[in-house]
Length: 300
Length: 263
Image 1 (cartoon, chains in turn purple, blue):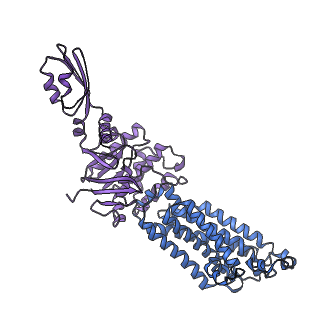
Image 2 (spheres, helix red, strand yellow):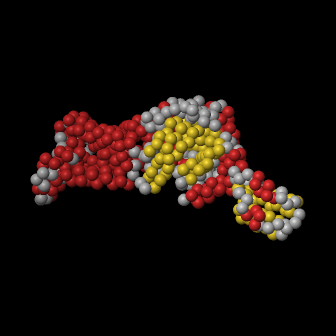
Image 3 (spheres, chains in turn orange, cyan):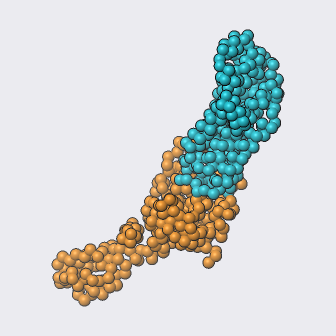
C-alpha cells in the first residue's frame, strides 16, 4: 500500500502536558476525497500542520506523497495545495498581487488560470485584501490552494464563511480535482459539508481516530427513532432487552424507541405480535456524527 | 508584481521604510545644520565646564570641528539609536509578526525552505538599512556646503553612513535571530532594544567604569570608534558588524528549523 498518499503511523503530538494527537493511524488512498471530521479542538488542525511540517510530531511518523514532510518539505509543498484553517495574508495588498506573489513562490503560474478560478468564485481581484468580507477572503484561500492543480489538496475547514452558493461551487471544484486524479483531505466540524463529496469519512475525537468508513456504512451504524404500532397492547418488558434499543416507551399499542445499528433484532421481536404500522426516521447526519462524539465521551 | 519574498517584503513595507528614511534624514540634517551656530566655540566653551567623564561618554571633546560635532550628536547619538530601533522593529516583523498573525503557516506551506525564507527577510532588512543610510548620506551632501561641513569629504560621509547601515544590520540580525528562535514579537523588540541601549551605555561609559576592554563588546564601538568622519572607511569594524548580523541570523536559522511554528 505504498501508493497511499497519506500514511500516518502512531502519529502523536503533545503540547506540554496537553495531548494534540494520540497515536493516530490513518491511510488516505490515492484519488480519494477524505472528510476529516471532529469537534473543535479534536486535533484536526494539528494533524494538518504535521502533514505540512509546520509542526513536528512528538512520536510516530507521517509520509505524504511518499515523502518525509520534514526532510522533503520543499519538494512536497510543490505538489500540495493548502488552505489553512484561518486564512490570513497581508491586508495591504490587492487580491491580484497576493495571488501572483503566492504563484511566484511556486515558480509562476499562467495568469489565465488564476483569473479563471477567481472568476468562477466571483472574486474581485482588484479589491484590497483587508476590505474583503470573511467569505471573500476564504475565496482567496481557495484560489491559491487550487490554482496550481496540485496532486494533493489539504483543506482545513474550507467551507467556513462561504455562503451556500459558493459552497456548491467549492464542492464542484473538489469533485473536478478528484476526477483529474487528485487526492483531497478536507477537515470540517459539520458532516453535512463533506458528505456530498467524501468517499470516506474519518472522525477524530481527543486526538484519536474514533471512526473511519464510507458515509453509507457510518449511516447504517447510526441511531434512528423507531415507532411501531401493534394490533393489541404490548408490554415494554419484552422489548427492553432487544439489542440496540434504548429510550423505550410503550403507550398502549404504540412503542417508540431509539435504535442503534441494524433493526433486525427489533423486527424479529415485534413480529411475535401483529404489527399494524412502522415509522423509522432516517438517521440525521448530525446525530450520526454526535453518536461518535458521545461514544468517545463515555469512554473517557 | 513581486514574486519572491525579498521583493515582496520591500514593496509591502515601502511606506514604513520611507518613513524611517525620511524621519532619520530629517533628524540628522536638522541637527547637522545647527553646526554653523556652534562652530564659533560658544557650545564648546559651555561643554568645557561639563565633567570630563560626561564629555568622554558623549564624545564632546571636540565640538568645534565638523567631524567632532557630527560624531557626537548626529552620528554619535541620534542616528545610531534610530538605526538600532529600525533593526529591532524590522527584525521583529520579519518572522515573529507574521507568525503571531498566522500568516507564516501559509507562506511556509509553499515550496520555500525556512532558511531561504529567513534569508530573504534578512536581505530585505539589510537593503532597507542601506536605503535609509543612502538617504541620510544624500541629505548630508545636500547641506554640506550651506552648513559648513566641507571639512568632511563626500567619501567620509559615505563611510559613516555605511557603518550606520551595518549597525542597523547587526541589530536587525539580532532581532531576526530572536524572532526565528522564538516567534514572539514583543520579546524580540524588547530584548533587541534593551540590548541596544545597554550596548550604547557600555560603549559610552566603559572607559569611566574602568573596563575599557569591554567596549569591544559593543557594536557601537565598531560603528563609530574608528571615527569614519575623520578617517574614512574602517573595513575591519565594518566586517565585525556584518559578521555579527550574519552569525545571529545563522543561529536563528538553526533554531527556526528545529522548532514548531506557533499558532
